[in-house]
Image (tube, rainbow, N blue to C red; front, side):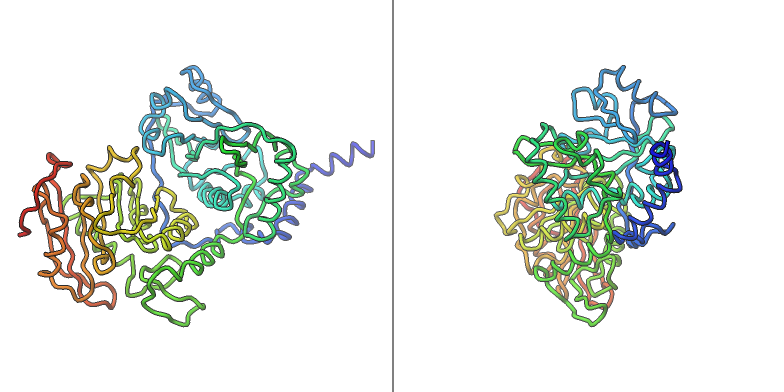
Length: 474
């Protein structure tokens, strides 16, 4: 009788909330208890909405039933259902299957609302405090990729909205792990690594007494721990993880990256130095990306070239700020290139900010560099409508000949400070083929900097992909 009463008291909603609150305070998760997030980011990756061939269904059981009747494999959980990569998936989901890297899976939340209202944990299954600790799908995107950065989980490519008729279905697009159950000793080693990450990094688990939970019980961790073909272990379900301070992760990542990038100014302000391109948690600088991006976007718009749903490429991307801006403006995917010392840190910064639909390649850019070989094959079909940024890279990077022969739709060239239009004209020749014309050229001035030449080159769509000998630049 006493034991039964104790169990009832332990799982009473008030008792559960008290334990969660105590756990949150011990783990330093007090920021998550506020109704308003403490994660202040100037720009966010625009959420993509994809129409599917799934007919209008009002609840997840009906959706799952329809998917199975269509011959698809569906793996169900309490808060989400998962569609692994499989034949026939594109016939049901449509465009998103080929708009993400091959081998991607779709983890669909059962909370069928927009991303601003939806939660990973369904409202009927978890308390409000637990859902607040875990955060929004955008917060989970950052937490899941932080797990990946620590080599503990797969990469999360995106969080998007799939539509079944008029019904929104929030979904994470994830790197699928095809694996086997690890041995008990392998699981024990993994949990040792996890404990180290919890004590040494900003990673936290939102479950009190997590080591007693079946989700962390060896060897399978409730089927969440898998050994991939290479022998690496991945924890595939990120719903229990959170980041204590995303801002601290971002700031430490940027501070670690200060060495590889040229520094324009060093100001005593919150102990940070300022890099060539400004980032969301820093003030504007001479290389302020916001003002710079608006000038480029305005120029593209004047010629009927909008960024939504386009592939954007940035050569010499530095910290990646222009790619962040492009994704905020609705670009579908982004590729960047920079020196090996800078590229890795730029990728880490992007993911820490929640910009995940991008890849930054480490490359020694010179006149012989082969851009085509460095672009993933699944993106080839989207190159003819892509936009290329080559911004103030001339003094540091030779113009690779292969860049002129990529079948891009438009290329924006920005010269360096003090360069004249005549000098820039000579540099632009390296991008010209018979299919390309100079649509616009002018001087621009960013923030307090000197004037720089800005060129817009456009390749005519009916001849996109064709190449010829370089004509004279008008």
